[in-house]
Image (tube, rainbow, N blue to C red; front, side, top):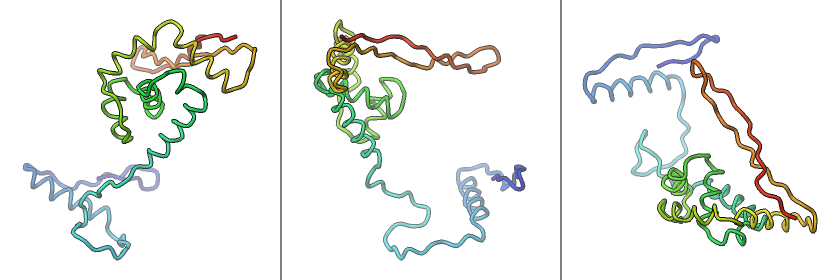
Length: 183
């Protein structure tokens, strides 16, 4: 158990346990020490739930973020240009949490609570998304949404590449690469 007192870290030894029961008793003791002198707010709730039991998750605020991102995706015209929900799910899940395609399919989308395609389906669709003209269709949809008319639109892929160098220091390298030009 530790905390900061006067800018200095304070560590308090609670004990050591050899069995799972011993460790559980030590965790209870540590919680009691941490909560000492702090009153509990009586909300007048009664039921089968005991203090310390995990709370049941009944809703997620992630739905609000998902709805906002989904609306932006539609407004930009990407829904029509992409032609399927698999692309939308993959893109939006990776905006919510920049991660691998597998983690997006197997962890992020289920946490958000939206119905989605399997990871294998996403893998099969990657050929379609990398095909000639797919990026141009997205660029054209974005240009229409921005009402650019006959003007040209140049989209840039701005990604941060993290490079590990000597002694595990991390350096960021901002790479800017043109994605597509629409006339």
